[in-house]
Length: 607
Image 1 (cartoon, rainbow, N blue to C red):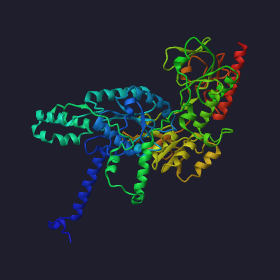
Image 2 (image 1 turned 90 degrees about the vertical axis):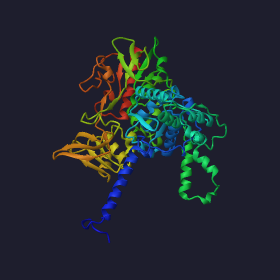
Image 3 (image 1 turned 120 degrees about the horizontal axis):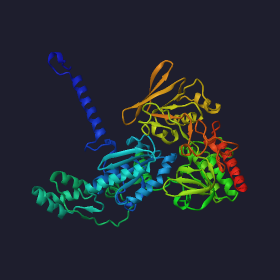
Image 4 (image 1 turned 45 degrees about the vertical axis):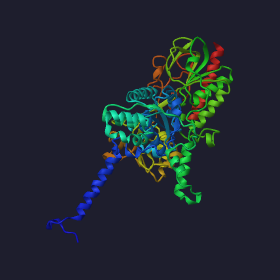
């Protein structure tokens, strides 16, 4: 029996508790900071003995590679930290995320611009949830920047300027520290170095040269830190052999004893299938293959008969009708296509659209192809301002110094998501607070989330999140929903959705890096709701800021219509949510787009 501490002996129960506590603390700090001082969590850092294809030199020609498993990401980060010394930029995206699709072409352009200076990877969070979770991704698109096993920077959102800035800064840091693409330290060079700086290690130089044969950058950092000098490097002779066996693990398997397939366990076979699938993911399918015109090609002295600002159902319907009338319309809008494509929502109530096309993305792509078949031109850019005082109307777009000239303009620029404007909302955007459940919801699989709102948008978000999240709490400021009965009944009958009536959000809170809870206020006072994600679905505001002073708007910012789709400026028409207080449906937007097209055609015939 154990001797109690009161009699001067050892209390073994206390000893065991102390040992367990010490082990817990050790593992916690190892996971948080890594065994080699690298930031980002030990779960992310491994070595390049795993699935990374170290012969893949696509980064030398500016190619973007998709990594399909966490082990692939670990291997790539370790390889470039230890061997090339190049920075790694990782894009976490989803095909249902409009901003992800918008920034994807810019990511490719920047990869080409910084070829040989940086490595560009992308992670589909739906295919590779494990990597997204290990990297603590809470919104999309998220860009993370790594150098020497440290996450140097991170931001969320489709910000090309920030992406270019961080990439350029990191590439410059790497260049200053030294990059070693296709370079190594030979045995002779390392022996010569040690004879000068540490003669006691000269006899070990061959062994050390072999040890660091594929870890040139790591060897240089070690030497610089210890001796304030580095050995001479030389160009590595490229292996011209087949690339089919290109990971370290492949080489080890080739050296191992061959086994028959029946000798492998089910787990080993599943792991091999996953590895081979991972190596096969090189498809660049983030962007649509659609013929957009450049902004530079449509500015100048040529006057377009019809320019449509907006790429949703209203703008695309107007494009089809004006194109069929022989007016050759020009559609100016970012490629991600407004609310439908931008948020990836399902579309169950658009007449005649069913099956695979019954999504926001599917509907917009169908309408684009239809309009394009009748000689509609599309420009993937944003409108910065307009001058509507006289004809021809002038439209200023991003990325050019000139203006687009137009005889008539159809404004179909839609609306954008409304925010709550409460404490913590801005601080946790992209780190738990979102307006796009279909974009970011998968990141909160098996976690608690909150949805704020009471309309169709909120119902759709709650139902979408309930498929993957552990618990969905729906917060609504009234005692009944404004949503359609079908959607409201689905939410009310769902076992994973809990509803807080007559409740408003007071503030969002977290640990600095991610959201942890939401403070809500009801008749009973303040209450704390645990939540890793919060999705705001309280409506939209019309995108008319660039029209102020140019056209008549109502008190809520919607375009004021004189008759049908005519605005206060002759020759300028409006369609869709930008002028619709009430209905705000894809089908009604398409209908008003048709009306605006017919009104514009009539105006041109009369003038």
